[in-house]
Image (cartoon, rainbow, N blue to C red; front, side, top):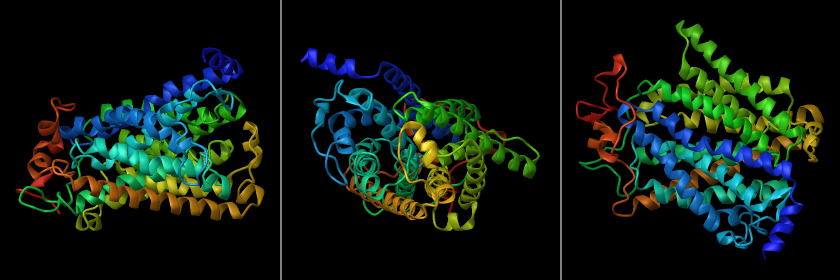
Length: 452
């Protein structure tokens, strides 16, 4: 057995293996850092309860991926699910996947799942209880993310039959996480089962506020921006020129997005905003994810500007009377950036992908509409978006509703906990202590009832 494993190891390319190993380590930091970002967005008394789900995600997804996640996403056969060949990672050792060991490929893909899940559970921020998040993560990873990853990357019908172009996850990462967070948020506003309206719980809108801790946002921006370079570069699974290009276009797109959003805010307020810079960078990273292996530098620059303009407009929705009347809550800005941006990015990839650039990594694709005249690719990308959004939104809503049926797993926090701050009621510690001068008397609840 040992000799067979070592022989397979000898067949792996050591440079490619080292490259993906380093990328995996850097990408892992994205997962807890998403939690830090949500902690920075949240009211100061909700900082830890908004950050902790990302840590729970790492632990829960690692176990789920080991037990069944990897085989569902990358097992053989099936147009939607993989088979159970690799359950409990049986046989997942040094056998090459491409030029790297299978166990390393599995670990790199685990980071993808955990990243998507960490973004998605942002829908629980400031209103959801922590305990139900654990079963939600396990069930969601099994029935939502893994099938979608298989459909696009694991040999399923979207990748193999339709031929979607999705380099690092426009739909499996961003549309999926944004749709999931939106479904969770919607359920918390309109719960069906045990969390529905009562003397103890009032499902409705909560008041908007400034970010609770800008330092957390700064740290999160630095780590996510840097680690996302490894996220896209490592997706090639080899150290080649496509991985170099993916890193470069990712940085340029994020830079264009950050500067665009920050400058617009400065023009409006005559002040520079870290929050705007961060959101612009995120919108750029979202826009480049599905296209990083298929577009050139000038196109990436335009993607960044367009992404910032689009996501900034989408972000305005939560400030409207419509949002207040219909209890629309997007405190992590997940819908505005990841969902809207992910849809736009996936469709734009179909427009601007170039088969010449895909060939840098040895891939043969038909290209997109603008440069290669492949009009059919646009419709293929739209189909991917529609399937990905529907699968993620409907499935996530069903999962959280199912969990809410279980006594003790009510997903919506009681009014008292939301009003006082979830950190004071659900965690032993707090992350943020000092209020913003404008918000010393802030409370999610006004005069004893959550503001509608």
